[in-house]
Length: 385
Ligand SMILES: [Zn+2]
Image 1 (cartoon, protein in one colour):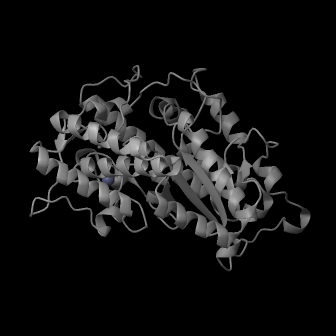
Image 2: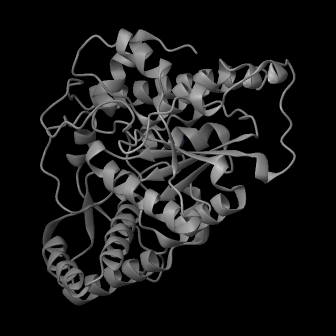
């Protein structure tokens, strides 16, 4: 893995708030980093269709990196936002990272969505409403503004620097993403499907029923023994990559293991959210695993990746890493095992590393171009959406 100190020195300012939950315990006051860039962007009006309606077509939805139909509740909320706009005669305006409502419309919508939330007694319904509303707002706010592939403003698009590559078909990543991370410019999970494609790295947004069903249907087909979550489960003994995939002389070979059908694919779930959100996300996965299999979800903790990061990280507060770096860590640790050493995982890790470097450069360039500091600043208090 080519993991330059320069890249890593930039990771914390990008990713300390986007940290992968594998590495260190929670820290309450997380710095804003680049996330504050967009939160100060000027408000934008939602893209409208010819008839004055907002359209989220299947093609547009899937172009953002997903591979499911448009979620029903997202469509419903988009329709509600449109109707509300008509009633209030206040235009839907967005600012920030494609998701924060602004102005008079926000005031009216705030009351409405809070009232709706209160009517939902079931926590599952509340989560689904919360997630769908987050996604709907982000879609409306980002349409025509962000590049659909790299989630950066069109003028900062970094897609030309991404070199897609094949991931060994025995591995499939699942980006289990918090809705507040969907369409975030500094999200690093999106790099996985940009590089490896949506089949090899699939997005599943927390609380979006259609996507969670797709993911679990796939897990059911693979079976519990082929699904792992990169997460430090405190209630179970810590298992490293080496513990999870023991090698012996019989599989110390030089040929690439054959993947005959989907049953043999190893599924790795990467929780793509802040530390504070990740506990609830993991709990949801864990509960689902128990209801599906009657057994715990298997977890993996990275070892070498974390220590390498730690060694290169110049500041003690930079003690965690981002989703893309967690993927690099996993691929690198698997590459060290005899049974996977001919799968080209080192090349995939290198491609990831280069992609991460390109993303960080694009974000830094944008920030400097806009006359903003590249140093971390205190985080603004987030309001819903
Ligand atoms: Zn782009």
